[in-house]
Image (cartoon, rainbow, N blue to C red):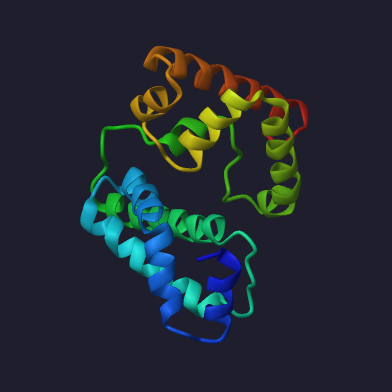
Length: 183
């Protein structure tokens, strides 16, 4: 079923909107949540919470790209759950977002809220400046939280090659943010 039709079902408050969303995007949403949480039960709960959130946000929201809309909700929910789960116990493994901490300003400052628009603009410009493969690597790692092994396999690259490209992209992003006065 087309996204437009599924969104119309949400707008008309038809519960089948959820079942159509699940059949079309369920696997994607679970994979996003699992990449963040590494727990199948938590990932399944995030998927269900995504449908609940979408149900409550549509209307007034009217997404044109339902898959991207649901993915963003899932990612947000999974990151919140990850933060909650890891608050009591600190895991030794570095998460993809922790890799970016040296590049992105602290969200705790008042200025960060004012600069959020500028930060988004600079990051979007940075992503547009990358070739297709690098942009794909960056987005898979830092938006979809894909593992380096999965990215390498999907793109036919070596893991070390992916790590090097990510390192260079983070360094380049940091340099741009410093130059723009955002870091």
